[in-house]
Length: 482
Ligand code: AMP
Ligand code: ZN
Image 1 (tube, rainbow, N blue to C red):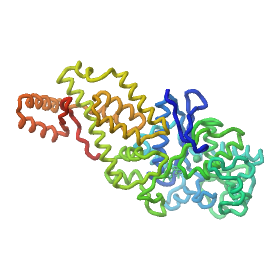
Image 2 (cartoon, protein in one colour):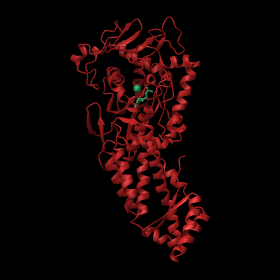
Image 3 (cartoon, protein in one colour):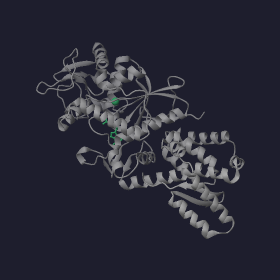
Image 4 (spheres, protein in one colour):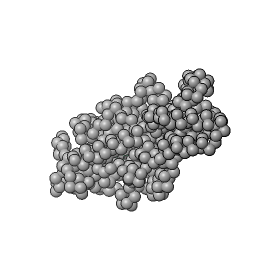
């Protein structure tokens, strides 16, 4: 078995992956804040998480995966100030906070389905785990990690020895107050809210009773509580965007490890940003793009997935509409090429009988093993999807026999998730087209080129291309946008 190497943010190194249990991997992916449609940067984060899951499965592991739904507590500022994003969006859109949260959760789930992202074990909502969060804060309180100020209960980061280990924040720098102290009541600049009190002047829609007063959870505590509840005190993998390293994940580690005394996560994996035309995607810049925008311009979600997979997850990805168009064209070309497998194999059967088809190459098992090994060799090196895609093209353009190409495509698709299998299953040569193709073969043998060409035209009009190769005629389905 090929070892699997993953880049662990904790050590800033590619490490050989070894799960806690033999065959099961526990994985938590920080989920969306459901106050708006996810933008394509957010979606990149889940395409990455899905690629990771598929790679683990390809390596023979079962993956117990959680994607949480942040439906409360994520404030407009990471420094525990500002408004709750969901309450704010509700006010702007004249809906209740609950309506907003459920609506955008639904959109998120639809989007990831369109992107062929596999459904996780669970999508737990923060609002349904308030009890678990309160219990966790109570433990931290008992252990002396918390203190109360006028707007909430805070975690005292000076009490947690390893604070900042993920972000590689050095203690000295930390004490010197490298960051602006926003709330003067906080004991240390990096301290963060575990529980926030409802403001006195505004009535919040989402609020709960707690031993400390009516309010709502701080943003970070939900992930610790839900990760522990569904996956255990220590888990194998936790993911998110690189923006989560310094604050969200740093704080998750502090509060979880302070509470349990155990390591929280063994492997931290972070996906780099998707930028738009070279700029960070931000509402204030007005450059948010959603999957809906992509579809409205006539592009397919899976072509967007293809585009995402052509950059390595740890590289910045620059989205441009031109790149999107090239990705759609490349994706169409892939489908067209792949369509020939079933269509042509079908044709060969008619031309030469089943014997010739199986004589085209080695046995399925050998071909399968060779494809499997080649793919593992690529993806097990920190999920190198750009290389896998390059390899896919190389093989499709090569002189390998159709059978191997087909096997390779179907195997690679287990990682890439580009819908090749489903597409291929639909490719059947209609009887009247097959008749025409066979007739054309005969005409060509008889040297009746003009008549043969005419038939080729007719077949093209019916949506199929005939290409003459050394191995014989190949039939492809003409794939146009959508
Ligand atoms: P949010 O909905 O803001 O909680 O973010 C959901 C996920 O998307 C988190 O893992 C973020 O780190 C990630 N994310 C946010 N913006 C981007 C971006 N431009 N590119 C890649 N990932 C992002
Ligand atoms: Zn989280």
